[in-house]
Length: 310
Image (cartoon, rainbow, N blue to C red):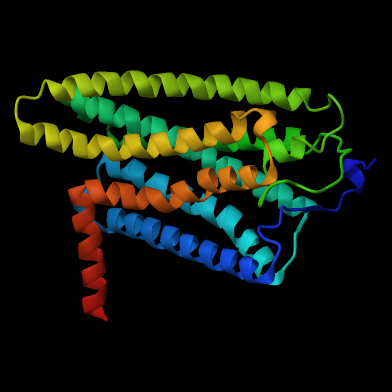
């Protein structure tokens, strides 16, 4: 029996048993993180430098790219360090910080995806009111509300989780610090308070999910009524990337947190953690740039301009 006050560090799940596989995992994480940094960095630079991209949709996309960078920088560097140096340790304070920042960025991403859905809804279903409902001040307020709500959510969950007494050792079944893995180490029934907070958060997130589904039903109804094929294609080109990102994010995160304990084992937990914490931030820039001509052109202009300068 160990108490949380006596735990100075946690042991993360090793990604592999052999040295060769550890180095392979290091190279894979390095490639994924570089792709995420490059893709999201290009989006941020293109939107910031391209004056024709200073619209609500691209403003929120810039914020989304910041959350993707935050997610990658919070989880991947420690996993790479452990694989390279063949260690599993993470300090108690480091684990708390990692959990806080991961929840902060992942919560902000979900809130921003909901706001981006509202942006697409107003743009397609209420185009005459777009300038009024999504002016620069309104966009700034919505983005600030998303970041502030994410901060409050992550703070509550982090404080609540790390106030639990831990009686099941210090070995976490994950490559980074997550709430479900820390709860598994808590004393009997002491985790009920955190589960209650998770239930409240889940209800709130489900409300956002219902809003997203309702909005897209209205959006697709409006798009299908557009007479020209070119108009429908343009509308779909701005909606489908967002819908793809939402689907990827929600499906992996929901499975990670709501899968039954009966199908929970280390290799599956590891795969699911990577799917919802590492893969979406790396794929989001690719999904958006493939379907959005304006963004693709701005990124290409940014890259070719940089090359010409050098």
